Amino acid sequence: MSENSIDYEKGLTFEKVWASIQELNKSIQELGKKYDAVFEKHEREAEQRRKEAEQRAEQRRKEAEQRAEQWQKETEQRQKEAEERRKENEESLRKLKERVDATTRSVDRLTQNMGGLSNRFGELAEHLVAPNIAERFNELGYHFEGIAHGRFEIRENGQVVTEIDLLLENEKTIAAVEIKSKPNLHDIRGHLKRMHITRRYLERVGNGDKKLIGAIAGAIFPDNVKKFAIENGFYVITQSGDTVKIEVPQDFKPCEF
Image (cartoon, rainbow, N blue to C red; front, top):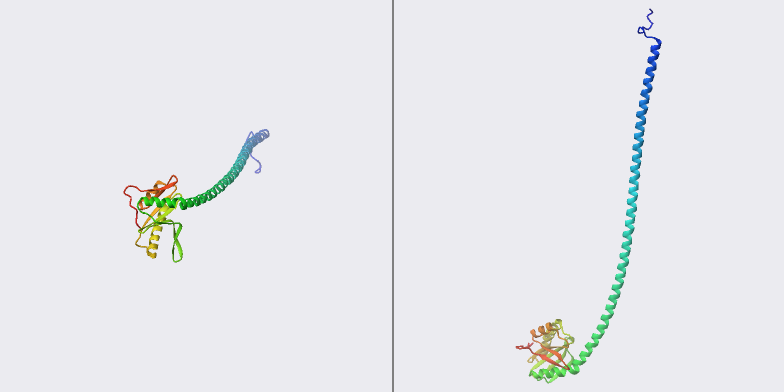
């Protein structure tokens, strides 16, 4: 046998080799089919995952659009409500302004009426109260001989420092009377200050030896104001029908300023 000859397995024939090749080819084809099947499976799974990812992305997009639409609606609703509140506030302010204007007009009319009332009360003080006050004081034993009314002015350094509505006088005593339609606590304090100014005036004009007493007259006299006036030693003069009366509580002693 030649050295280059192939030593085939004994009994191996061309048919057997061909059959082996056929078997190998079949195995390769089956392996290829399995590979194709695996590849297709992976392709399908990848496609499924892609579709699911697209679906999730689409769902998120729709949800985002819904949230944006809901936010837009809520924003528009809030703006609408804010606009309604603004209009309501403007209407409320308009009505409030109308009420304030109406109240201001009412106060102006009331002020004018009160001014007229004060003038009429001043006339009453001059023509009715003054003579009656003198008479009432005389009933208490003062016997005032002169009455100065019409706002007696007291000046210091050329300036009017106070005014007295009624000034009653006799040889020993002077009474300074303040007349108010409705006295208040401030009026009482003001009259206390007026009494001290009047005392300085009497000393200056040579009447320092005379007693100085004070009184408050009012058409309407609140109880607390009346009590405060009496506690400060003032006579309280109130209206009684067409005349006036001096209220003198038990153990009352007028203050001498």
